[in-house]
Image (cartoon, rainbow over all chains, first blue to last red; front, side):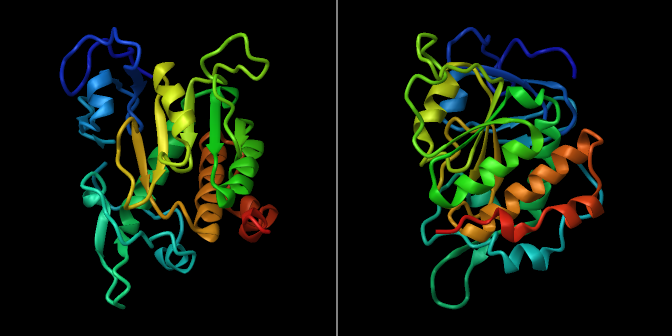
Length: 55
Length: 204
């Protein structure tokens, strides 16, 4: 598992809000961050390591 | 990601368990996972089984990155309760089936308070109480999403029929096998012989 993400992978916002999250990429383990707004709106993220597109 | 991968189970098996059957309504979020509309005139949207299989592998890989005790499996749906409980017992995870007591993930004064690291929901819509508490606790969320669900607050979606008895049994059965395989505790043959999918189906 690589380093935990500190910013949102989709928007670049820092993960300081209560409803944000950081987790390893399900495909390669690279750190992925999601801000509260991106999670709430279901904004797609792309893993910087392997290109996996979620959610 | 790229390249041909061997499916976890023959696609015919998925189809016979109706994993690909969606609903008559579809959401914009789930459009990417929908293969076609059923030609039999029912208007049901059919899910792309290849993507379901791929996502199941990813979900098993993802769950394998966490300690078993840090995983929480939730199912408010009747048909998901037995498979969710058996899955949790097989991999050593925690489970909450039936009514989710509000505050379980957020109120430390509650007797039932727990602090998992990741949550797996059977239906993001039916398990909305667990989902809203999980996102408030900064937990990643894995969800089985049908064609009518949206991807709000879901971090990894498994596109599949989350309403069918046999469909949920197959999904949890496969997922348990793959998580145990990823940990090196199980192989396909032993799992096939010791666990019967029909035993994982809810009955009432």
